[in-house]
Image: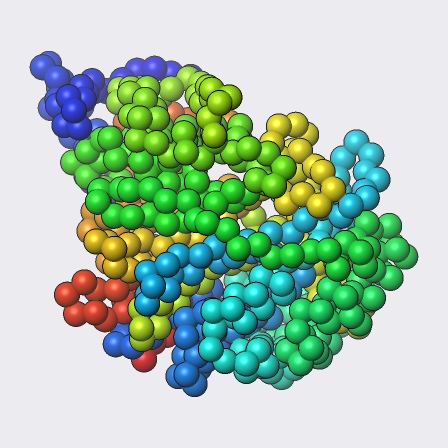
Length: 559
């Protein structure tokens, strides 16, 4: 890897200082700003309530619930069930997720962990399959959404489930994004007839503008609405899942389903530029987002023009350290001790920041040394209601269309999460264990009051994208739509390439190459980097301001 620094910088406290002798051309290249921002989608404002999700129909389902007297949790659950219908490539009740809830009255933040879990008995060979019945983990979505709604919502469960059931029954228009996902996955989908019958009627993938219906899923949703989660985990749906698993080499049993529980957890918390960052704890990626931000908090990031080589380099180096610690330490807290306190300490952030050389790439990044006495498919949505309650929620079935398995007669598409365990370390497979993931729905408070709810899908890019989104909002004062649409990049400790959207200038790419990066340009608004949704509360007016991602079919609605 080349180490030809185009600049040398010294950090004194948190002040960036140009050295003597640095050439004017070098300084200009290293601080070249990104093009003037303009957004593809309009920024949406509303007075009372707002829902931002990856699909207009899901956002509308949530907004209708707000208007019917539901609170942010009711609306988020309605939108989450609905997005599982209209984004079957990314989420659904055969999957999993994490929800972060802020309750404005008591000023309390709660996390609902509904990650999927390993069956008690598995019989894998040398590898875990990526598709098929054996790829599926015990789903958590129904348990998590119902727990959140029944404990923190206002309405009855049937009211918040019905919008999704109606969409599944009457059908919806296939978007170009979904049509593209169908084409990309068609070879695998064609191997699994129950799924193919839904999304490839007539033997070919549905095209953009076609109608996708799933009446069996509508019936399953209404059964859950009427009978609660026991229908899914102990009743008729559980019987169907267990029978099909037994018949096709899967491992989920009725006992696995009956034993599953969604878990209410404490969020992870940190401080960045005076803002409180509240995110989802292990086994998911919020800890790493907070850790990276606190490393950046030691440096004057905003003094580097947005998307300049220096800006990208500082964030990339912090990201690599967060990813290294994520791989080394994050796992299911019921099975492993995660050193959260140490990783989120200000002392550790300062130590990590001191490792970063502003003039070159770190050739390797090691995880923290812990003293042992230290106690690709996904979707995201955000909701704010009239009272200031907030929800940030991220759900997934892992790969696009998950395991490609639809349980016959139910319309339920299963996840393929089992492959997300690791061969060793804190994320190694164990009976009943929840595999880790990078999802990191996050709520931001300012002076103790709600400021933003934001999240994104995007596989491993979730942690880096969340860092960029929050830095865009806080360091650069961007509006939420501008922050979402701003160019993105991805760096981690195990990747040789710095992946970056094509809007980066040639001069910036050259400067990054001279710093030692292997720059890999992708599309201008590339789906590789996920599809964020977010809502900010304007501090002066109290209005809700929402943004959605043009990289997906994102939509914001409010009233």
